[in-house]
Length: 198
Image (cartoon, rainbow, N blue to C red):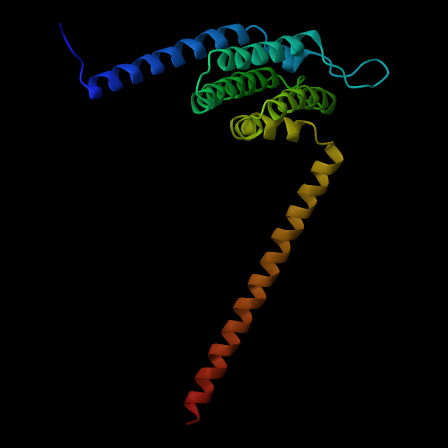
């Protein structure tokens, strides 16, 4: 009869956990893949202007909820569950960010109203993550997508104000630099003159 050492058993358990994690990420990712474009495409507001959860976004939230429920039902360690959701949020971020870049290459997709719609849908996912105790992970792994969507949802007037402010800051810093170097030059000349009179 073959007996495993504690170290061998531990290594085997680690491999099983790693394999199980990979399978979970793949299955959850495959379930999310066809649903995620709905975050970019679905309308987040009703005709009366009220925030609503579209069926496409609802399905994404349902997959996330079911995934979390399964992990908890099988008593998966919280650290492993957090790692799995880190991968899922990373996957969501990468897929939606790439879709956003692809669709925007023609220019018609990038408009303020689309940005507001996507921001509202993304906020629904962030709200779900907050309620599930995964807000920090969602914020960390959805940051690139969230930043791009924030920019898209910013009114053009605000962006122009920022651009003008930036230009004013550059112009002001150039003036300050010129004055600084002029004063520095005067100070060094004054210092040379004072040394020369001694």
